[in-house]
Image (cartoon, rainbow, N blue to C red):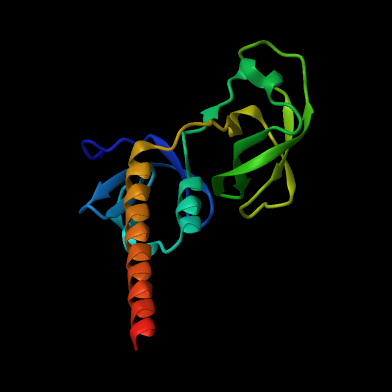
Amino acid sequence: MAVSGVNYDLEFRCNADDAWYTCAVVLEHGNQFRVKFKDFLQTYFDEVFTVTDFNTHGEIEQLIRKFRPISKPVEDNECSRLTEGVTVNALYRRQEDARYFDAVVDAVQYKEHTPDKCVCSYLLCWQHGPGEGTITAASIEDICFIIDGDIHPKVSEFTDLVKQKLKGTSVQSQASFSVFLVCDFWC
Ligand SMILES: [Zn+2]
């Protein structure tokens, strides 16, 4: 059941298994940022961050890199765009398990086919996840184009709050530093 006002409009690289999932983000209580997974609706699965979880700008950048627009499945008539060296988001299948990770197209075996049914075969070199560093074969239905985009407004709203907090902290430490200098001078 979709919660009203919640849009599952971005992709998040999950902390638990490093896989990409479709998610929604919600800013709540003015300082808490909740990531909700489209495929796991119980709040138990949500990842929750608060402003105080972040101590450096590097940590903010790390969080920003965990989000991106939703990858777009490659259509059967677009298979010629999947060339060697392209980074894609693809389904890594192992027994019952199938999750999305990034991979680089290592080789393509093009076959002649009609525009509505691609029968080409792709070798993917996995960039992270359980298959990292290995190469497996995939067909087009498991492969998505990664979409570049601006930072999602809710993500930047939260990271702005964190930046404000960090700025406040550094102003505070500067202030106590000058008090220390004055004291040192007069004492
Ligand atoms: Zn094809």
